[in-house]
Image (cartoon, rainbow, N blue to C red; front, side, top):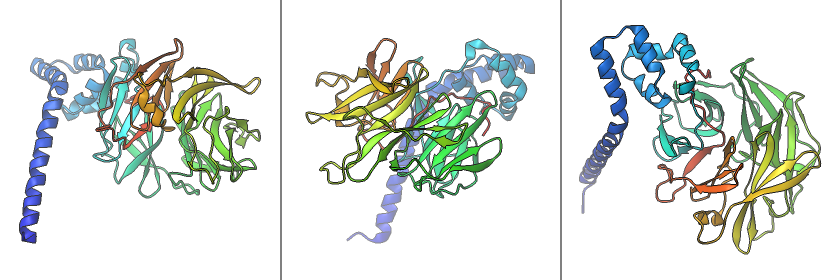
Length: 410
């Protein structure tokens, strides 16, 4: 029988070997990506150009290369972080940043994240979130900022490009993962943001970066609302629209709106389209709710929802007409067996819907992704995400278009 000492010796030897293999593989994978930045750095160092010339050259780099350039030396890091450089770069239209979406976070290993770039139709690796201490999970975001929740139930705001972060003061409500809603709203002119939270006790609180504190705006949701669905809200024209369930037993699902300026909830429940996103009754053979998510697209509130049809899942997109409170069906995801979207028949991730411009991205329960161009009503399948290995969708997905920024303050 193998002794305990020899077993652990063999175990650690094997894990070290596997770790070395992984490091060599990652080095080879990153060598090509880092080659451009290294070559630029070598040329600039040999030529010994003046600082103004170096600044002009670096300002022309795309943001991913610029972020890697920060690691060349402390002088370049200070230069790229200076207000003068950021102002000069902002005036160059050719290097304007394009949003990445969707952004995918790995829950299982290394807090890695990557994002899809529609301009190149490729996945881009982002810096891992290991600069934030403790274990964190993604809950919200806006612009170039992520809002995370750590293991102490505190919210953390970070800029993954500059690697700056801060803990927010603790709110009074209990922000448990499954019974609360957290949404981040960006005020572009003032570079400030607000974080709206609705706790499991139906308490509504708002954190304002300008005041650095939480304000309790409402203690209760409208009468009859028994639960609110997290990660399914949309902010449109000053209102935060949320999906809620009303009543006990056989529940009624619908939408209510929160006026951010007046700090008031609407009392009217807008019922979801028949059969879509409904909450099943407590005695149903299939407990839980069908996936449904709200998005803001081109100034309109839209709904991405699923319903069961002949044992398969049907995914459709609706637009809310606020003038007469009706739903207009915009598109339906192809669900025939020969389509590349067959995996969606097993379910839609309500926390995997993100929109920018005319493009709406959906994610299936297995991690496959599809995109709809609303202007042409054409569907395309995105390449497989490198963080979804073996159809193991142990991931979080940012429900906003991430705009990498060197000057987004936390």
